[in-house]
Length: 167
Image 1 (tube, rainbow, N blue to C red):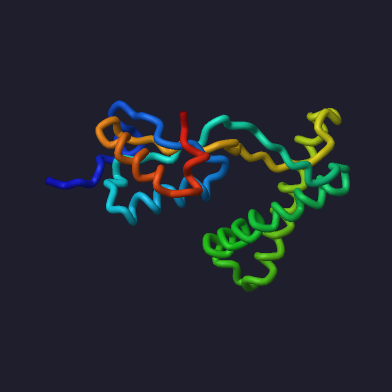
Image 2 (cartoon, rainbow, N blue to C red):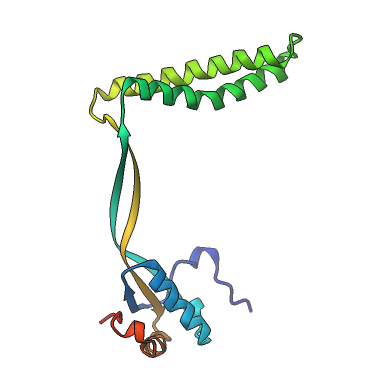
């Protein structure tokens, strides 16, 4: 009989109970590592990020110049692909150079056009670039109910975990 969990159940526990709560992922990971070192059945544990929040980092202002430059750069990849397809499917007696140049020009035109249209349709409502990330503000170590008490007992022996125990 295999002890490997089925993929559809990989992120589930039967009757989960909280064992400890930590301020960052590294602390939760260290607690699970400690339990592993103590030969605790860690396959009965989950680290769960809780109190999720969305963080958006503003990376710069969007202007027509930056939008067109971004479109041109993104069009280069498309242009290389278009140029290769043209070369492969037309036979191109003139050689790969002119065909790739045509593909690059088409890619840059398409990339610039599509980003310009998108920016124009936004009507200045989002004149900045940003990156978004979902982050947890705390991490909880959860355990199967049948071994939760043992996990708490073991973690209580670590001085750094005494203050972090979940109540």
